[in-house]
Length: 340
Image (cartoon, rainbow, N blue to C red):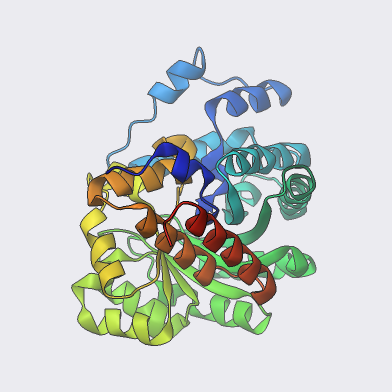
């Protein structure tokens, strides 16, 4: 029997892989453009949304970065994160860890403090108004230099209390994890937790996965489903209890496959995989839609979805007490619906 939309809607959730710039919906993009005196090359929201045609990671990134130019002020960044957290709260996301790309903004003249102060204000406001808990993860853009990444890390230090960890994203081709080894070693020394994107089906993907495990020593891996190509990598992920953050709908856009069988295989081997939305404004699905899509592909039942959310809370970077409280909430929901 298919999982009901009502069950998915009420399921307490954690989302660990969402790019805040990727939640910029066309309606807000037009609003911010008008606020900042910018003209978009589209007649309306429908025409803008129709322009989202991607066939791989680079074609997506071109549109993604161009859309950010409407983000200029603290208020813009506050409104961006608040809009995402309002949607997250509507889907009963109880905790989310949000990527942000400061270099995508500082490289076009927006100061780092403008970005982080605006995002932090949105997080605080949403916690107060909506009850959704959020943390920020600073991502370095891997197609920029390691020196620029280190400079960005240094800029972040006065705001360490607002940032739970650092990550690495953007175009992976020719930009292996070890390029940023010194940056991530310094980030670790500063107390940040570490994650890195290992995007789906990229060039040298198994070598990049080896580097994130052996050279960088990450606490989590974003995407990373290609570990299945090397049993030694799977065993190392299991040995260290490393979680993976899968994004089924975005997989289906950039690779023409949601990679559902791979997610199933990792679950069967005991790897803690979670389900997330990635860039939902561009890929057409927030976390609930991703869960429904994956359930349809794999014929998952309600207990399976509870297990996926247990993975998400377990591999999150929550303090132990708060994590346990959310897990208790999840268990109570499962019992209530006979899905323990």
